[in-house]
Amino acid sequence: MDEFMKDRYGADELTTTMGIAGMALALIGNLTGLSALLWAGLALAVIALARAFSKNRAARIRENEGYQALVSRIPLVGLLMAGQQAAPAAPAGVASDLKRQARTARTMWRDRKTKAFMKCPTCGTTLAVPKGKGKLIVTCPKCHTKLEAHS
Image (cartoon, rainbow, N blue to C red; front, side, top):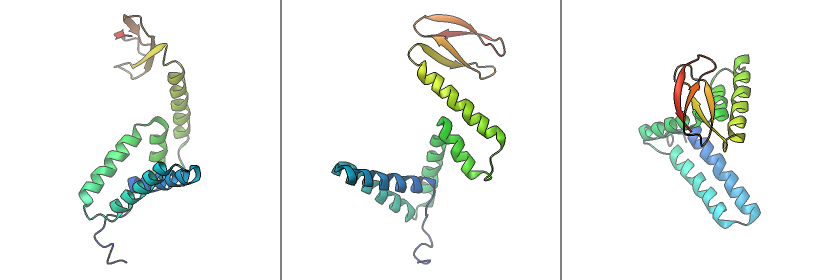
């Protein structure tokens, strides 16, 4: 087996995620009787195996880096994934950052129909402006920068 896997890429985060998602889809498809879901899950698992047995390391590394970049942009999942690669005991600041990001995401989702959200170009604070009001002059409450916003 060592000789077979000698030049193979092996499993990485993307391969593992694809394999788990494929098996979950196949299980759900089997339990619900949805054959399309079953076959999609099995296809995803086979693609994950093909990635693991691939000899094209450069392409697999690029794909995994793209996956990691995509996942890191998801508010809560990105911090959780970064926490898995870091030390097992996360510092206290990470927990408060997660709570703050979750609270901000809930607020943005709740107000998505009535408010437009933007970032202050100076300090990065998220600002909420009412939708449908046209051109507005907004003052950042943190750094007092005045900026023009279209809502």
